[in-house]
Length: 146
Image (cartoon, rainbow, N blue to C red; front, side, top):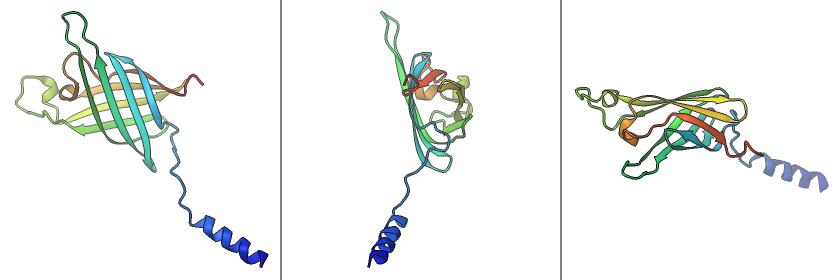
């Protein structure tokens, strides 16, 4: 009888789904500064695919306007980083504004020692945040101080 109970318990544990592991160790909230306040939220989906949300804000100072914006989607990441691409909603190949001539908003992500994330806005993102701020900067993982 004991062997039967042990076998039943083992089989029940074998069919419980495993929680997704974070192979790159980068899941969580990242905060920092660039052309404004930056926040990145990374959630592991499967394998090396992550859900990403990037937000930037610059506060209004006196008569100078502030700005803000964000972009999100899925990105493929490893322990060193990756490149995030999202269709440029303001894409216009005939525009006189260089940022609107780019078909994609591209942002490079590089993970460094000390739980730092370097963001580099490469092209086509102006429609997501306006002219006074951007997605480039240095961020720390929220658990970096622990």
